[in-house]
Length: 421
Image (cartoon, rainbow, N blue to C red):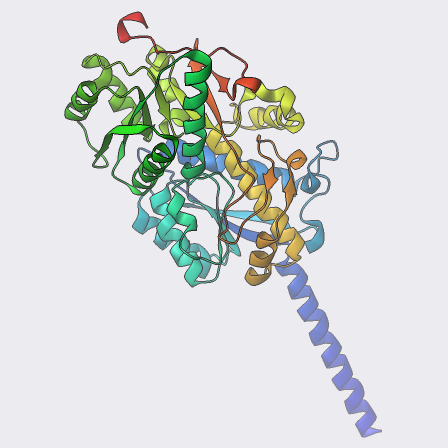
């Protein structure tokens, strides 16, 4: 009798312990903590804020319920495979500095307890922050860091949804060939400018490599220290070397400074094309001086008819943030949706399970709001299905001008001189 009572008591205690454990587990799954690491202060804050908005908007859609929106995770509130758990974003500010990015990544992992990180738009920050994530075996997904070398480090927990600047460089070389063929542009020489940072150096190397393959000559390859306040000598060098097309990987402050300097010194490249960055986030601050500038991109609002989801999702975004998607916010949206898809398929916040799910990702084009063929990572963590387009500023708006078969406007070549703008 005593043994039966003790056995019964033991059973009750075990059941109570199990119930408490289950309750704790369910409580732990009420939110899934994800780090959102971007630049929120300093000269590159405009780009960082767009990235954060794209992330938070994706999380709003995942956590809410939008049965009329043809995105899998929009149909039900929360993550269905985690009993409707909501994503809780933990936003952190890298200040645009690699060392701060690394410190914030460690804080997000060790103190905030995130199961994954989305970040950190600047390639130099992403480089250091992802090293920390790799050390802690924490999945890290980047939306906008395009320096090709980031996926050449043999990392297991690093993933990138956006095409790299190696891919965009290839796109630009094909663009030049098409421009020569269709518009008799006769482009033979290339110039390249950037700050001397991770993104600028990596993209410059990709441009040189792609140019060699396609038979073009890089006659200018100019880099300046980050934070420079004077570009007179650099612009005068470009004016002397006179490349047929000028490519740039420059951020917000630099595109403003370069434009004002080029105007002051009357430097007029026939084509000026950017690798995103300031061409996305500060282009409007140039007013009419930006006319005929070009940029590579991953989407365009003038392609609404070709991407069924884009029109509806962009309208929702505009209602929430009082602006439309740009190249940063739309890629951050896509990366966060990709990460959430992996967490949901993992059915867990276990980091190894999420990493494995990311590696097995295969999202079709009809689930995306960008002009990609889908999201599927190679063994290096690079999305193999991304691609780019070229847009040109025409009458104060970016219009798709390449590929020519999907163009919504006729390309202007050469650019108007400063005296004609």
